[in-house]
Image 1: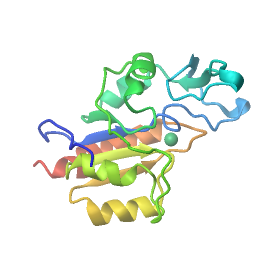
Image 2 (image 1 turned 90 degrees about the vertical axis):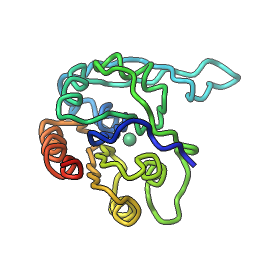
Image 3 (image 1 turned 135 degrees about the vertical axis):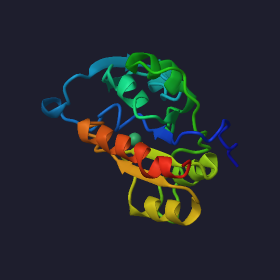
Length: 187
Ligand SMILES: [Mg+2]
């Protein structure tokens, strides 16, 4: 059972996936979005090479301006990523974010018989009723149905295409929701 996130529920949460929204890993070379810098990273969860050789670093493309834009609309940010707390070492400094809390996932690759993303029920537990926006490339209708049934507060499940990453229109959706439904619970 995840520990509910701490802190006063004064602002909605913004729960951030890394691969997809921030790292548009699915983009072919000719369609990569502008403004991203490529980094080679060696998080601890990379599998070693043959015969115990060191793991090959992965390429991660990040937009250094994304942190400032994510901090703008009035959310409390947290990671909701398979990178878990390692996002604070590898991702946050490269996009201008401070260290953030993270939703702990027991098994990010778990198969769920109800068809929801492996993250969904743990996100709902961790949010503990607090309004949240969640940006991820793996959200689908099963996740929306699960959250609607189990989460008592407002929630925005915003799917981002893994070849495009966060774009202007996504930031507009997030800003509108924070100022509208995400804020309504506190008025
Ligand atoms: Mg993802």
